[in-house]
Amino acid sequence: MANEVTISLAEKEVAAGQELHGTVTINYAGRWDSVAINSQIENSSDVFSYSLLNGKKIKHPYARLSIFKDELKGKTVVEFVSSTNHVPPAGKDHTSVKFRVSLIQEHKEIFSDIAYIKVVKKDTVASFVMPSNKP
Image 1 (cartoon, one colour):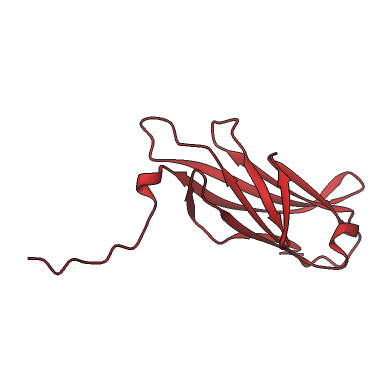
Image 2 (image 1 turned 60 degrees about the vertical axis):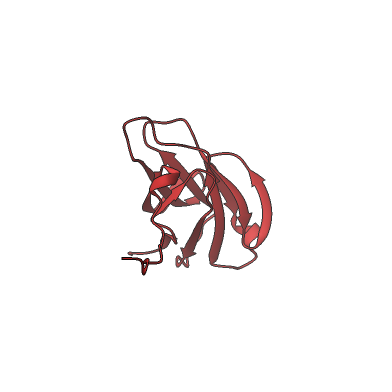
């Protein structure tokens, strides 16, 4: 039973204060009570805070976001926006982050998926620069 729940992240890297857009897709047809989204920033106690859930503004300043099945009202896709104030420590150009989604049934995890991104320093975020025509 592969891909019963999946998480995908639109960005591969973000800097402090930038929004990260994520999508959780639930393909499991069996019983489950809630879906939990967790973020873990490597070697840090900093967290990603959630600000948007399925188009609705929320204020959830914690690493774990739990959503009851009843709250989804039959939807099988959860879209979220989150951000962090984390800055990689001196001497490092990035910090690795793991996002994990879990389907929960009667207090037990029944399926999960993981996605990874990097938090980079603001001056190293990939951006498009117009080439100059000057010699």
